[in-house]
Image (cartoon, rainbow, N blue to C red; front, side):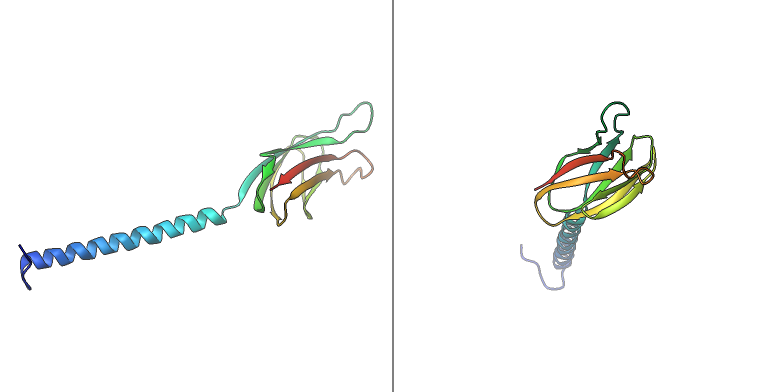
Length: 138
């Protein structure tokens, strides 16, 4: 049965074609938006500062990362200070003051592969032991 020009079947066929075309365009545009937003969302790395030991030798505290290996690009570093003092943390030339028992976010861009040093020093005791850790970028 072929549609006659101007008949009910022709009108129904053209409406169905328009709905299918609109659905296809909608699916394509939403898929592009989803892939573009996921590509620009920076990775989140959680970090915890552990206080240096108070007795014995002056050893630095530890700065841990989870995950400890990230890909090149922009990351958001969430640093939790479990030490009892305020520290100024620096990672790849980006620094931020982290008060005791506080969580701060730093946005850091890594353009090259390598092992990056993250260091935190106490601004009130510049000669004292600081806190340090390593982050690997692939």
